[in-house]
Length: 410
Ligand code: PSV
Ligand code: MN
Image (tube, rainbow, N blue to C red; front, side):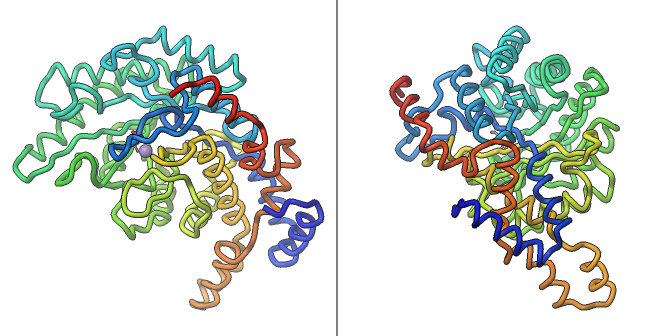
Protein backbone atom coordinates (compact mmCIF):
# COMPACT_ATOMS: atom_id res chain seq x y z
CA UNK A 1 0.00 0.00 0.00
CA UNK A 2 1.31 3.45 -0.87
CA UNK A 3 1.01 4.99 2.53
CA UNK A 4 2.53 8.44 2.59
CA UNK A 5 0.42 11.14 4.16
CA UNK A 6 0.49 13.02 0.88
CA UNK A 7 -0.83 9.99 -1.00
CA UNK A 8 -3.63 9.55 1.50
CA UNK A 9 -4.65 13.23 1.43
CA UNK A 10 -4.50 13.39 -2.39
CA UNK A 11 -6.56 10.24 -2.59
CA UNK A 12 -9.19 11.60 -0.22
CA UNK A 13 -9.31 14.80 -2.25
CA UNK A 14 -9.96 12.86 -5.48
CA UNK A 15 -12.61 10.69 -3.87
CA UNK A 16 -14.34 13.76 -2.41
CA UNK A 17 -14.41 15.38 -5.84
CA UNK A 18 -16.07 12.34 -7.33
CA UNK A 19 -18.41 11.20 -4.55
CA UNK A 20 -18.70 14.27 -2.31
CA UNK A 21 -17.01 15.08 0.98
CA UNK A 22 -19.98 13.85 2.98
CA UNK A 23 -19.86 10.36 1.51
CA UNK A 24 -16.11 10.15 2.04
CA UNK A 25 -16.53 11.16 5.69
CA UNK A 26 -19.32 8.60 6.10
CA UNK A 27 -17.08 5.92 4.63
CA UNK A 28 -14.21 6.80 7.00
CA UNK A 29 -16.57 6.65 9.98
CA UNK A 30 -18.07 3.36 8.82
CA UNK A 31 -14.62 1.77 8.55
CA UNK A 32 -13.75 3.09 12.02
CA UNK A 33 -16.89 1.60 13.56
CA UNK A 34 -17.15 -1.76 11.79
CA UNK A 35 -16.38 -4.83 13.91
CA UNK A 36 -16.04 -8.39 12.67
CA UNK A 37 -15.48 -11.56 14.68
CA UNK A 38 -12.42 -13.75 14.32
CA UNK A 39 -13.18 -17.49 14.12
CA UNK A 40 -11.22 -19.40 16.76
CA UNK A 41 -10.92 -22.35 14.36
CA UNK A 42 -8.86 -20.32 11.87
CA UNK A 43 -6.15 -19.97 14.49
CA UNK A 44 -4.69 -23.41 14.96
CA UNK A 45 -4.31 -26.62 13.06
CA UNK A 46 -7.87 -27.34 11.91
CA UNK A 47 -8.35 -27.56 8.16
CA UNK A 48 -4.77 -28.45 7.24
CA UNK A 49 -6.17 -30.79 4.64
CA UNK A 50 -5.18 -34.29 3.63
CA UNK A 51 -2.62 -33.22 1.02
CA UNK A 52 0.63 -32.93 2.89
CA UNK A 53 -1.15 -31.92 6.10
CA UNK A 54 0.52 -28.51 6.01
CA UNK A 55 0.32 -26.45 9.18
CA UNK A 56 1.59 -22.88 9.03
CA UNK A 57 4.62 -22.19 11.23
CA UNK A 58 3.77 -21.03 14.73
CA UNK A 59 0.13 -22.11 14.59
CA UNK A 60 -1.62 -21.94 17.96
CA UNK A 61 -1.57 -25.25 19.85
CA UNK A 62 -4.30 -24.51 22.36
CA UNK A 63 -7.07 -22.09 23.19
CA UNK A 64 -4.78 -19.77 25.14
CA UNK A 65 -2.49 -19.36 22.14
CA UNK A 66 -5.50 -18.83 19.87
CA UNK A 67 -6.64 -16.04 22.16
CA UNK A 68 -3.12 -14.54 22.16
CA UNK A 69 -3.20 -14.42 18.37
CA UNK A 70 -6.72 -12.99 18.24
CA UNK A 71 -5.73 -10.29 20.75
CA UNK A 72 -2.73 -9.41 18.60
CA UNK A 73 -4.90 -9.21 15.49
CA UNK A 74 -7.21 -6.86 17.37
CA UNK A 75 -4.25 -4.76 18.49
CA UNK A 76 -3.31 -4.26 14.84
CA UNK A 77 -6.84 -3.64 13.53
CA UNK A 78 -8.94 -2.34 16.42
CA UNK A 79 -11.82 -3.96 14.53
CA UNK A 80 -11.87 -7.52 15.78
CA UNK A 81 -12.60 -7.43 19.48
CA UNK A 82 -14.62 -10.67 19.45
CA UNK A 83 -13.54 -14.28 19.10
CA UNK A 84 -16.10 -16.81 17.85
CA UNK A 85 -15.98 -20.24 19.48
CA UNK A 86 -16.95 -23.79 18.55
CA UNK A 87 -18.32 -25.69 21.55
CA UNK A 88 -16.55 -29.02 21.04
CA UNK A 89 -13.24 -27.51 19.97
CA UNK A 90 -13.03 -24.78 22.57
CA UNK A 91 -15.15 -25.86 25.56
CA UNK A 92 -14.71 -29.63 25.64
CA UNK A 93 -12.21 -32.18 26.83
CA UNK A 94 -13.42 -35.23 24.93
CA UNK A 95 -14.92 -33.66 21.79
CA UNK A 96 -18.32 -35.10 22.74
CA UNK A 97 -19.65 -32.92 25.55
CA UNK A 98 -19.10 -29.21 26.19
CA UNK A 99 -18.51 -27.84 29.65
CA UNK A 100 -19.77 -24.52 31.03
CA UNK A 101 -16.78 -24.27 33.40
CA UNK A 102 -14.33 -24.45 30.50
CA UNK A 103 -16.31 -21.74 28.68
CA UNK A 104 -16.10 -19.60 31.80
CA UNK A 105 -12.35 -20.01 31.89
CA UNK A 106 -12.02 -19.21 28.18
CA UNK A 107 -14.14 -16.07 28.62
CA UNK A 108 -11.90 -15.00 31.50
CA UNK A 109 -8.75 -15.65 29.48
CA UNK A 110 -10.18 -13.60 26.61
CA UNK A 111 -10.94 -10.69 28.94
CA UNK A 112 -7.42 -10.79 30.35
CA UNK A 113 -6.16 -10.27 26.80
CA UNK A 114 -8.49 -7.34 26.15
CA UNK A 115 -10.91 -9.20 23.87
CA UNK A 116 -14.34 -10.82 24.27
CA UNK A 117 -16.08 -13.99 23.19
CA UNK A 118 -18.46 -13.66 20.25
CA UNK A 119 -20.80 -16.08 18.53
CA UNK A 120 -21.07 -19.54 20.05
CA UNK A 121 -21.23 -22.42 17.56
CA UNK A 122 -22.60 -25.72 18.75
CA UNK A 123 -20.48 -28.37 17.04
CA UNK A 124 -22.67 -30.90 15.27
CA UNK A 125 -20.04 -32.57 13.12
CA UNK A 126 -17.46 -34.41 15.24
CA UNK A 127 -17.47 -37.99 16.59
CA UNK A 128 -20.84 -39.70 16.57
CA UNK A 129 -22.49 -37.50 13.93
CA UNK A 130 -21.89 -39.75 10.90
CA UNK A 131 -25.64 -40.43 10.65
CA UNK A 132 -26.53 -36.81 11.25
CA UNK A 133 -26.98 -34.57 14.28
CA UNK A 134 -30.48 -33.11 14.60
CA UNK A 135 -31.58 -35.45 11.80
CA UNK A 136 -30.05 -38.58 13.27
CA UNK A 137 -32.43 -41.53 13.46
CA UNK A 138 -30.89 -42.21 16.88
CA UNK A 139 -32.85 -40.45 19.62
CA UNK A 140 -29.88 -40.33 22.02
CA UNK A 141 -27.71 -38.60 19.42
CA UNK A 142 -30.40 -35.99 18.78
CA UNK A 143 -30.78 -35.47 22.53
CA UNK A 144 -27.01 -34.97 22.96
CA UNK A 145 -27.06 -32.23 20.33
CA UNK A 146 -30.17 -30.58 21.73
CA UNK A 147 -28.47 -30.38 25.11
CA UNK A 148 -25.37 -28.91 23.53
CA UNK A 149 -27.48 -26.30 21.74
CA UNK A 150 -29.28 -25.29 24.95
CA UNK A 151 -25.92 -25.01 26.71
CA UNK A 152 -24.67 -22.83 23.82
CA UNK A 153 -27.59 -20.48 24.50
CA UNK A 154 -26.67 -20.23 28.17
CA UNK A 155 -22.98 -19.69 27.44
CA UNK A 156 -23.86 -17.08 24.77
CA UNK A 157 -25.99 -15.12 27.22
CA UNK A 158 -23.82 -15.40 30.31
CA UNK A 159 -20.34 -15.20 28.83
CA UNK A 160 -20.51 -13.93 25.24
CA UNK A 161 -22.52 -11.52 23.08
CA UNK A 162 -25.79 -13.49 23.03
CA UNK A 163 -25.41 -14.89 19.53
CA UNK A 164 -25.58 -18.61 18.69
CA UNK A 165 -24.82 -19.72 15.15
CA UNK A 166 -25.96 -23.13 13.94
CA UNK A 167 -24.51 -25.09 11.07
CA UNK A 168 -25.57 -28.69 10.50
CA UNK A 169 -23.54 -31.17 8.47
CA UNK A 170 -26.68 -33.31 8.03
CA UNK A 171 -27.45 -34.67 4.62
CA UNK A 172 -26.74 -37.64 2.40
CA UNK A 173 -24.47 -38.95 -0.35
CA UNK A 174 -26.92 -41.08 -2.34
CA UNK A 175 -30.57 -40.90 -3.32
CA UNK A 176 -32.46 -43.27 -1.07
CA UNK A 177 -29.84 -43.14 1.68
CA UNK A 178 -32.07 -41.13 4.02
CA UNK A 179 -35.73 -40.18 4.18
CA UNK A 180 -35.53 -36.52 3.11
CA UNK A 181 -38.84 -35.50 4.70
CA UNK A 182 -38.16 -37.27 7.97
CA UNK A 183 -34.67 -35.72 8.16
CA UNK A 184 -36.15 -32.23 7.81
CA UNK A 185 -38.89 -32.96 10.34
CA UNK A 186 -36.38 -34.29 12.87
CA UNK A 187 -34.19 -31.25 12.42
CA UNK A 188 -37.12 -28.90 12.81
CA UNK A 189 -38.42 -30.54 15.94
CA UNK A 190 -34.94 -30.55 17.57
CA UNK A 191 -34.62 -26.88 16.68
CA UNK A 192 -37.94 -26.14 18.37
CA UNK A 193 -36.98 -28.10 21.47
CA UNK A 194 -33.69 -26.21 21.72
CA UNK A 195 -35.20 -22.81 20.95
CA UNK A 196 -37.83 -23.15 23.64
CA UNK A 197 -35.10 -23.63 26.28
CA UNK A 198 -32.82 -20.81 25.12
CA UNK A 199 -33.17 -17.37 26.77
CA UNK A 200 -35.33 -15.10 24.65
CA UNK A 201 -32.70 -12.42 24.22
CA UNK A 202 -30.25 -14.80 22.55
CA UNK A 203 -30.16 -14.51 18.76
CA UNK A 204 -30.05 -17.84 16.93
CA UNK A 205 -28.79 -17.70 13.37
CA UNK A 206 -29.32 -20.68 11.08
CA UNK A 207 -26.67 -21.29 8.44
CA UNK A 208 -27.34 -23.11 5.19
CA UNK A 209 -25.03 -24.89 2.78
CA UNK A 210 -25.77 -26.37 -0.59
CA UNK A 211 -23.28 -29.24 -0.27
CA UNK A 212 -20.67 -30.82 1.99
CA UNK A 213 -20.38 -33.17 3.63
CA UNK A 214 -23.58 -34.24 1.85
CA UNK A 215 -23.05 -34.52 -1.88
CA UNK A 216 -26.59 -35.54 -2.82
CA UNK A 217 -28.56 -33.62 -0.20
CA UNK A 218 -28.04 -31.30 2.72
CA UNK A 219 -30.91 -30.80 5.13
CA UNK A 220 -30.66 -26.98 5.08
CA UNK A 221 -29.49 -26.41 1.51
CA UNK A 222 -30.45 -22.78 0.87
CA UNK A 223 -31.45 -19.46 2.38
CA UNK A 224 -35.13 -20.21 1.82
CA UNK A 225 -34.94 -23.20 4.14
CA UNK A 226 -33.05 -21.20 6.79
CA UNK A 227 -35.61 -18.44 6.39
CA UNK A 228 -38.58 -20.79 6.78
CA UNK A 229 -37.05 -22.39 9.86
CA UNK A 230 -36.13 -19.05 11.44
CA UNK A 231 -39.58 -17.65 10.73
CA UNK A 232 -41.31 -20.60 12.32
CA UNK A 233 -39.05 -20.48 15.38
CA UNK A 234 -39.83 -16.85 16.16
CA UNK A 235 -38.46 -13.36 16.79
CA UNK A 236 -35.02 -14.39 17.96
CA UNK A 237 -34.03 -16.48 15.00
CA UNK A 238 -32.48 -15.40 11.71
CA UNK A 239 -30.56 -16.45 8.62
CA UNK A 240 -26.80 -16.83 8.49
CA UNK A 241 -25.28 -16.35 5.03
CA UNK A 242 -21.86 -17.90 4.41
CA UNK A 243 -20.50 -16.77 1.08
CA UNK A 244 -18.92 -20.15 0.30
CA UNK A 245 -22.13 -22.13 0.74
CA UNK A 246 -23.82 -21.51 -2.60
CA UNK A 247 -23.78 -22.87 -6.10
CA UNK A 248 -21.38 -21.04 -8.35
CA UNK A 249 -22.84 -17.86 -9.78
CA UNK A 250 -25.51 -17.41 -7.10
CA UNK A 251 -26.36 -13.74 -6.63
CA UNK A 252 -25.57 -13.45 -2.94
CA UNK A 253 -26.17 -9.71 -2.68
CA UNK A 254 -29.73 -10.34 -3.83
CA UNK A 255 -30.19 -12.89 -1.05
CA UNK A 256 -28.93 -10.28 1.42
CA UNK A 257 -31.38 -7.72 -0.01
CA UNK A 258 -34.30 -10.15 0.31
CA UNK A 259 -33.49 -11.07 3.91
CA UNK A 260 -33.33 -7.37 4.78
CA UNK A 261 -36.54 -6.62 2.87
CA UNK A 262 -38.27 -9.33 4.88
CA UNK A 263 -37.03 -7.70 8.09
CA UNK A 264 -35.48 -11.00 9.05
CA UNK A 265 -32.53 -11.02 11.44
CA UNK A 266 -29.25 -11.97 9.82
CA UNK A 267 -25.57 -12.66 9.98
CA UNK A 268 -22.71 -13.14 7.57
CA UNK A 269 -19.75 -15.51 7.42
CA UNK A 270 -17.15 -13.81 5.23
CA UNK A 271 -14.66 -15.64 3.04
CA UNK A 272 -13.78 -15.98 -0.61
CA UNK A 273 -14.43 -19.07 -2.66
CA UNK A 274 -13.28 -20.01 -6.09
CA UNK A 275 -14.34 -23.58 -6.82
CA UNK A 276 -16.40 -24.37 -3.76
CA UNK A 277 -16.34 -23.77 -0.02
CA UNK A 278 -12.61 -23.10 -0.18
CA UNK A 279 -12.50 -21.08 3.03
CA UNK A 280 -10.06 -18.56 1.56
CA UNK A 281 -9.40 -15.14 3.03
CA UNK A 282 -11.69 -12.35 1.97
CA UNK A 283 -10.49 -10.48 -1.07
CA UNK A 284 -11.66 -7.00 -1.97
CA UNK A 285 -13.60 -8.13 -5.02
CA UNK A 286 -16.69 -6.54 -6.61
CA UNK A 287 -19.01 -9.22 -5.20
CA UNK A 288 -17.98 -8.35 -1.64
CA UNK A 289 -18.44 -4.62 -2.33
CA UNK A 290 -21.90 -5.26 -3.78
CA UNK A 291 -22.82 -7.29 -0.70
CA UNK A 292 -21.70 -4.39 1.50
CA UNK A 293 -23.73 -1.97 -0.58
CA UNK A 294 -26.87 -3.95 0.30
CA UNK A 295 -25.89 -4.16 3.96
CA UNK A 296 -25.23 -0.41 4.09
CA UNK A 297 -28.43 0.47 2.24
CA UNK A 298 -30.38 -1.89 4.51
CA UNK A 299 -28.93 -0.16 7.60
CA UNK A 300 -27.79 -3.45 9.07
CA UNK A 301 -24.12 -2.56 9.30
CA UNK A 302 -22.57 0.19 11.48
CA UNK A 303 -26.05 1.26 12.50
CA UNK A 304 -25.92 3.35 15.70
CA UNK A 305 -28.84 1.27 16.94
CA UNK A 306 -26.73 -1.84 17.50
CA UNK A 307 -29.74 -4.14 17.68
CA UNK A 308 -30.37 -3.50 13.99
CA UNK A 309 -26.94 -4.69 12.90
CA UNK A 310 -26.39 -8.17 11.55
CA UNK A 311 -23.77 -10.38 13.22
CA UNK A 312 -20.51 -10.31 11.26
CA UNK A 313 -17.92 -13.03 11.38
CA UNK A 314 -15.05 -14.19 9.26
CA UNK A 315 -15.24 -17.90 8.48
CA UNK A 316 -12.05 -18.98 6.80
CA UNK A 317 -9.49 -21.65 7.29
CA UNK A 318 -7.06 -21.77 4.39
CA UNK A 319 -4.79 -24.78 4.19
CA UNK A 320 -1.60 -23.13 2.89
CA UNK A 321 -1.28 -19.61 4.19
CA UNK A 322 -0.17 -18.01 7.40
CA UNK A 323 -3.58 -17.71 9.03
CA UNK A 324 -2.80 -14.64 11.16
CA UNK A 325 -1.73 -12.75 8.08
CA UNK A 326 -4.72 -14.17 6.22
CA UNK A 327 -7.14 -12.87 8.86
CA UNK A 328 -5.52 -9.43 8.76
CA UNK A 329 -5.86 -9.49 5.00
CA UNK A 330 -9.56 -10.37 5.36
CA UNK A 331 -10.20 -7.48 7.74
CA UNK A 332 -8.47 -5.16 5.28
CA UNK A 333 -10.56 -6.49 2.38
CA UNK A 334 -13.79 -6.12 4.37
CA UNK A 335 -12.96 -2.52 5.21
CA UNK A 336 -12.24 -1.75 1.55
CA UNK A 337 -15.53 -3.38 0.56
CA UNK A 338 -17.46 -1.49 3.23
CA UNK A 339 -15.98 1.84 2.11
CA UNK A 340 -16.99 1.07 -1.48
CA UNK A 341 -20.50 0.16 -0.41
CA UNK A 342 -20.86 3.47 1.47
CA UNK A 343 -19.64 5.55 -1.49
CA UNK A 344 -22.43 4.45 -3.84
CA UNK A 345 -24.58 7.47 -4.66
CA UNK A 346 -27.86 5.78 -3.84
CA UNK A 347 -30.18 8.71 -4.63
CA UNK A 348 -28.66 9.38 -8.04
CA UNK A 349 -28.71 5.65 -8.73
CA UNK A 350 -32.35 5.43 -7.81
CA UNK A 351 -33.19 8.29 -10.20
CA UNK A 352 -31.40 6.54 -13.06
CA UNK A 353 -33.22 3.32 -12.20
CA UNK A 354 -36.58 5.10 -12.39
CA UNK A 355 -35.62 6.68 -15.70
CA UNK A 356 -34.63 3.26 -17.06
CA UNK A 357 -31.09 4.47 -17.73
CA UNK A 358 -29.65 0.99 -17.58
CA UNK A 359 -26.07 1.63 -18.63
CA UNK A 360 -25.75 4.94 -16.84
CA UNK A 361 -27.01 3.30 -13.64
CA UNK A 362 -24.55 0.46 -14.09
CA UNK A 363 -21.66 2.87 -14.65
CA UNK A 364 -22.61 5.02 -11.66
CA UNK A 365 -22.79 1.88 -9.50
CA UNK A 366 -19.50 0.45 -10.71
CA UNK A 367 -17.54 3.65 -10.16
CA UNK A 368 -17.24 3.15 -6.40
CA UNK A 369 -17.73 -0.63 -6.48
CA UNK A 370 -15.07 -1.42 -9.08
CA UNK A 371 -13.20 1.67 -10.28
CA UNK A 372 -12.50 3.72 -7.17
CA UNK A 373 -9.38 3.21 -5.09
CA UNK A 374 -10.72 3.55 -1.54
CA UNK A 375 -7.50 2.67 0.26
CA UNK A 376 -7.02 6.32 1.35
CA UNK A 377 -10.36 6.07 3.18
CA UNK A 378 -9.32 2.91 4.96
CA UNK A 379 -5.90 4.38 5.79
CA UNK A 380 -7.47 7.57 7.16
CA UNK A 381 -9.84 5.55 9.35
CA UNK A 382 -6.89 3.64 10.78
CA UNK A 383 -4.94 6.81 11.46
CA UNK A 384 -7.93 8.24 13.31
CA UNK A 385 -8.29 4.96 15.22
CA UNK A 386 -4.65 4.98 16.11
CA UNK A 387 -3.87 1.58 14.63
CA UNK A 388 -1.26 0.78 11.97
CA UNK A 389 -2.07 2.07 8.50
CA UNK A 390 -1.22 -1.31 6.98
CA UNK A 391 -1.99 -4.17 9.41
CA UNK A 392 -0.32 -6.88 7.31
CA UNK A 393 2.88 -4.89 6.99
CA UNK A 394 2.70 -4.05 10.70
CA UNK A 395 2.41 -7.78 11.45
CA UNK A 396 5.46 -8.60 9.34
CA UNK A 397 7.47 -5.91 11.10
CA UNK A 398 6.18 -6.71 14.59
CA UNK A 399 8.36 -9.75 15.28
CA UNK A 400 5.27 -11.64 16.51
CA UNK A 401 5.66 -14.36 13.89
CA UNK A 402 9.27 -14.99 14.88
CA UNK A 403 8.25 -15.11 18.52
CA UNK A 404 5.49 -17.68 18.07
CA UNK A 405 7.64 -19.83 15.80
CA UNK A 406 10.30 -19.95 18.51
CA UNK A 407 7.83 -20.61 21.30
CA UNK A 408 5.47 -23.08 19.61
CA UNK A 409 6.99 -26.18 18.13
CA UNK A 410 4.37 -27.65 15.78
C1 PSV B 1 -19.27 -25.07 7.65
O1 PSV B 1 -18.68 -25.20 6.41
C2 PSV B 1 -18.96 -23.74 8.28
O2 PSV B 1 -19.14 -22.70 7.35
C3 PSV B 1 -19.78 -23.50 9.52
O3 PSV B 1 -19.98 -22.12 9.73
C4 PSV B 1 -18.92 -24.06 10.59
O4 PSV B 1 -19.25 -23.61 11.85
C5 PSV B 1 -17.54 -23.62 10.14
O5 PSV B 1 -17.60 -23.70 8.71
C6 PSV B 1 -16.39 -24.39 10.69
O6 PSV B 1 -16.47 -25.74 10.32
MN1 MN C 1 -19.74 -20.69 7.98
